Image (cartoon, rainbow, N blue to C red; front, side, top):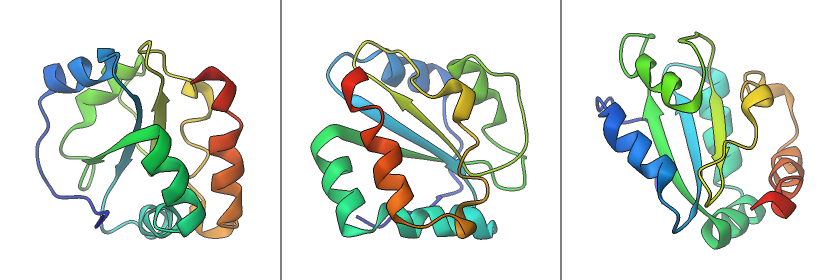
Length: 129
């Protein structure tokens, strides 16, 4: 999979339908191609141990915010006000519950966090999936 932010404007209603979909766990990644931490997070997502977890447990969606000029209203779908600072990730279980609302900004300093920490992060939510 080629992880990147596409510049596409997302439909908030479609995102809400994805969140509510009971068929799978979801990982939503907000970022932009200009952001070094977002690019580093994409690198982490391509790590073999992370890809194995993602491929087995999640459907991953990438939401481009460009320079905070598109898709910002989608944060409201997760119960958050519009806020800057990327990357942000939201883990959503099959019940539509956002599992990491309080820590969605944990990866904003991704380039200073070892890759293996993302594996540990995902594993910490396994009992809630």
